Image (cartoon, rainbow, N blue to C red; front, side, top):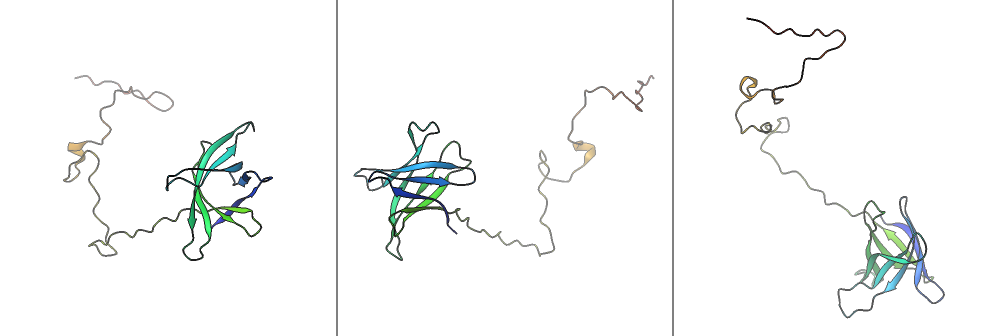
Length: 168
């Protein structure tokens, strides 16, 4: 499901500009047309007004696409900035009034099914060997508890008696 995060419009016969807002990101953006002979070049660079409002910073790009079902032209791209926790994939659609709606959609992850196993539904698969073990059974007498030898002194404090060394 696409969600609208902003609206853009042509400003005084100048650039297409407007605001985009999410719960964690808000910016005044403008679209700068890209002039290139490269077929793979974007149609627009996405520029954001810097926090001091003195300059523009490039935060993404939009490529032009045409819908196979409707023939409608739209733009698709990504916004990314160091202030954002993750990039945002966006699409920009021209509206009847000449403005542009900016929407985003969370990418759909493909569902993966686990491979069938030979075990029945009530059986559990074998556990892998413990780290450091190369197989076989676990014997605490020969493998130890995994903690190694202690070089710490015996604990002292309330209720604890210091252990006296044994004499022979």
